[in-house]
Amino acid sequence: MGTVAIFGAGVMGETLLSGLLRAGRPADQLVITERRPERAAELTEKYGVRALSNVEAAELADTLVLVVKPQDMGTLLDEISPHVAEGNLVVSLAAGITTDYIERRLSDGRSVVRVMPNTPALVDQGMAAVSGGRHCVPEQLQHATELLAATGKVTEVPEKMLDAVTAISGSGPAYIFYVVEAMIEAGVVLGMPRATATELVTQTLFGAATMLRETGQHPTVLREQVTSPGGTTAAALRELDDHKVRAAFISAMEAAAVRSRELSGE
Ligand SMILES: NC(=O)C1=CN([C@@H]2O[C@H](COP(=O)(O)OP(=O)(O)OC[C@H]3O[C@@H](n4cnc5c(N)ncnc54)[C@H](O)[C@@H]3O)[C@@H](O)[C@H]2O)C=CC1
Ligand SMILES: O=C(O)[C@@H]1CCC=N1
Image (cartoon, rainbow, N blue to C red):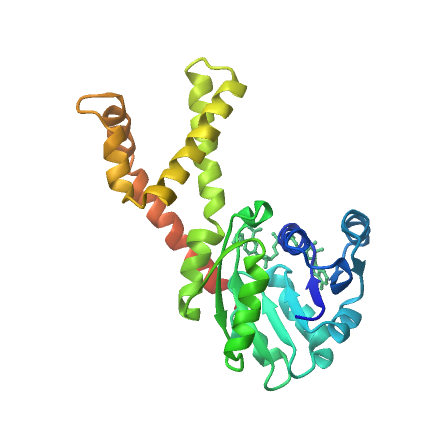
């Protein structure tokens, strides 16, 4: 895999960096670049990796992982483009930025992989989807898959599906945390100490997620198992249906996918 350079060491950049180190990749095969000097200093101190300029990193690395905001991609690509050698692999984690957008800003024939990761990668429970660009060969897609597998599961999808992936698993942790916040708030409304409510909700989420993964049962079956006729759960679910919560979730994710498509154009 050679040297991996992470361009932009914010939330996702650090998540990937720490995951690669936990997976056993030596620190001397990893470099970061970062526009904020204090952030670069923090991470070099914390992880023992080097921070370089974008140009230095592009010249050194075999795999270039771009983890800046979509709005910053154009500037970054213009800066590194003359320094990306043929045979190197460019991996982008930016929401909405297509492989075509990246290829058009690099010299002809450069290999690009687009990835949509998510933040549970921080605890090695990430879900990432990958898609290869025009010049990406299967070995390079495999290489990107192995890189991401350091922090969780990885699946390959056709690129046209990546906006939907962004809406579902990329942004997904935020929706779950939103539901968790609401449930904790409900516990407080019902008179519970906040710490008790937080413990109950967190373990309930973990338990439900584990049931989904380990039983392989459909969520409807699992929900019905909780819902006694004339009982408490049925009363709660009727409220959620009356407030069109299911439809709101679907509209929310449609909005996220639309926004993902828009980001390439900005
Ligand atoms: N946070 C998340 O849950 C997810 C984020 N992503 C994608 O990851 C990318 C990064 O997101 P975050 O880490 O959340 O953002 P962030 O703002 O925390 O990190 C971006 C970092 O890039 C640095 N930067 C900007 N321009 C630079 C340049 N030209 N050279 C060097 N460093 C530069 C910034 O100083 C910042 O530290 C985005 O494109 C986002 O779409 C993808 C999936 C999930
Ligand atoms: O909100 C965003 O744009 C990024 C992409 C997926 C999660 N966070």
